[in-house]
Length: 100
Image 1: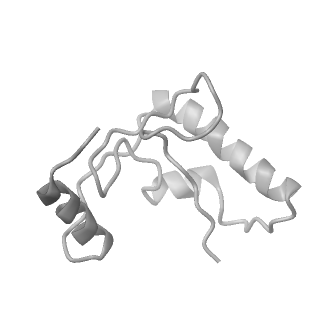
Image 2: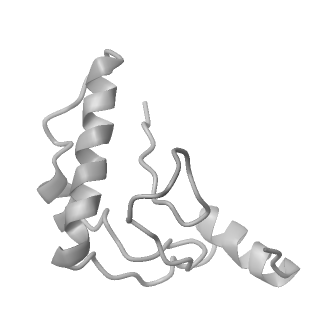
Image 3: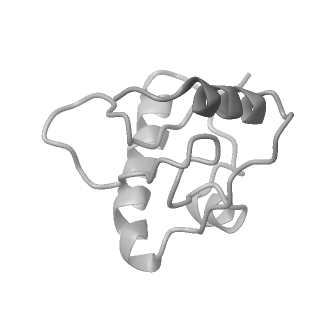
């Protein structure tokens, strides 16, 4: 799926903080079940790899802080929290990144 140069520029400007992020909505409680499952998998995988998981990495705290939203704040692409037929990321998959 291609995009115009102007759309790519707007996305880059949002990433650089030169343009405001797009509006999003918190996940509805119906969609939270799958997001919560993915969250616990991420937390469990980190612990298995020996990565320290801080107590602030809590689903309810992160949801209240606006981390689980319906769309990407940079591109506007709706995020799909449903289980996929194969492992790995899709263009509309939310992701959790570790920042050291």
